[in-house]
Length: 322
Image (cartoon, rainbow, N blue to C red):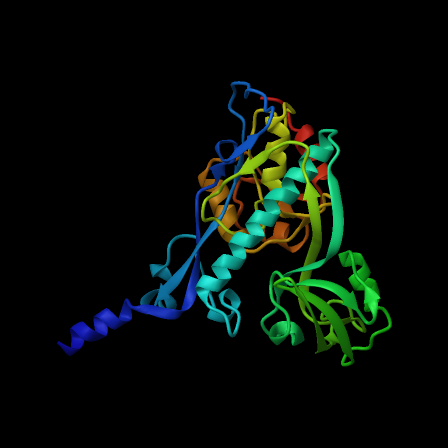
């Protein structure tokens, strides 16, 4: 009986999590655009790729060979911020996905020549490092509308507001949260990548009101997070008649901003496995650390680093048409 109980406990959930690869999925069936053109027959398609996140068993935690191929063990603090819950983090991810869908549509429609109306509303907090000074003061979804007595409408203005701040000094921010504006004071620390620069440990995006000239519906169900922004934008443009994939199986990942820039995402190892499983010809990945990590697991899969939507289109345009 004791041995049975020990065995059962060994396969009970631990405190840590696993990132598990999912096979990349075609985007076209998930995207509907008003006035979209029929798809030309051919081998090409655009794909997004996501990652499953689940609790690791104690066995998987201590015996790596029991984990699914391509999976990574991740500490709970990196999945569920202190004071939060897995369910709350999942809801944050769904909100990020909803914002990503609208931004991707705006970027694609602008590229197609449509007029898209946007109004800057502040610096949207995308993520907060769990060990950062801001961890107990800010949360994903907050919008910073003021910093050090200055109005903030863009992430660039927020960065500029930190000019001249010495690491260790306090900064006062005005934050819009649940429809109300609050004032918070946060102690800065020195950036590990930029000596002498004061930071508070957050990643921000553009908060904006967006009015689209066409109806665009993107539905990934319960998939969360902003990392499908790039493939969304690519597919919206293709739905409108532009030959984006050029006959290739193209998997893409990357958070997209209103200016078309492509930012880093998480789970790159698992997403590279997912692209390979789908038989992709190329995998578009944010340039820098993301692309470097993707190459470690790519095998024969071609990795294309990109920093912007326009660069992604240009790179795909150089592929030989199948």
